[in-house]
Image 1 (cartoon, one colour):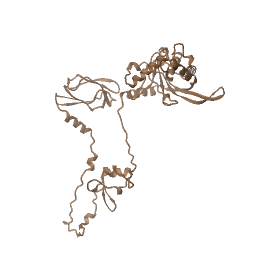
Image 2 (cartoon, helix red, strand yellow):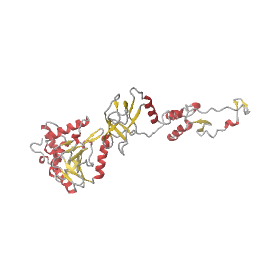
Image 3 (cartoon, helix red, strand yellow):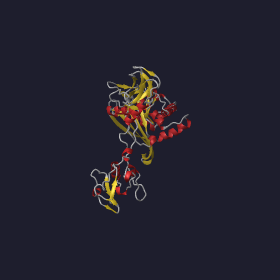
Image 4 (cartoon, one colour):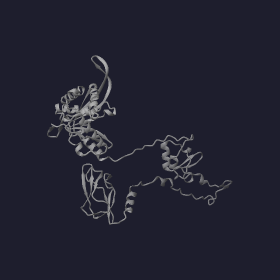
Length: 429
């Protein structure tokens, strides 16, 4: 007999799981204790073994897809067994208990005309009975309008009240002229224009495993590491001129972000305390400089790493960053591409952001938030002239970095960007 295999609860905090890999396909025989699938939880990817023997008749969750705990993961049974009835029963359980259509089409009980039996008088318009002029107390949804009786379903009455629709302007399309939900939905005012109807609505989508990881890591960073922030304005006039010259001779187009990576790498070499990590019982000061470059993708954020950035030319940095960007969009980045960062840069200047603060990307001790270059009046040599300013904000883990250390690094970064010749040697391009 076919049996449902449900999505297991593999951890105390697990509410749903993602099937990372199926080890069996429909039609395969499965033995008790045999590996059935790899399931990704909120904490790890775990192997799930079958608890019964049988043939895999149905897969309820495809690879890469998620489902709530206790939903249908698979169905095992005898070869050729029909599982449609089992699936239908499960679908019925999850469907709505009461459908609106049933409420709209619910027939009213017919009342027996007892006028003749009770000796009612007969006039020119037919038999009459005194009891017919009294509305039974049970008809709580009947309302008086235009000197007549108006019948309305409880749901339609509630919707009309919520939408401010006067009942005496409605005509019912239900049995016996009864006003039902359809009449509320189709209501138009006397002017022929639809009344303003505002309805609350929303959409929901399952949280991806990437978004779960981002949420977990950054929440841990924000609440575990005592952040403090240092902001500095940098004059980019000379860097703008230098970039124009470089791009006339460089083999690839050099962006401002590429120049910032180069300037940061040069600054980290002089300030190793910024290029460090908190490890609980010790602080690691990294001799190598691996700079993570935050990149937005559809599902969230990825941080590929430019390794040994201080030893690479601008052309090498630019080529590497562009390759990372293309791989990120195509979802081809590998774990080796985003592991090992010692410092991170997050640049939102291209989106028109002037200034922001970023959350430290573990295990780094610092992250640099870069704003856009903005034309603004500045004072030079006692004169107000047009200037190009860029704001950067350094987020620091106070367990590792002190304010003076962070400020010294920003001063070096400012000097590098305002005087590009100081960081660009003969082999920098």
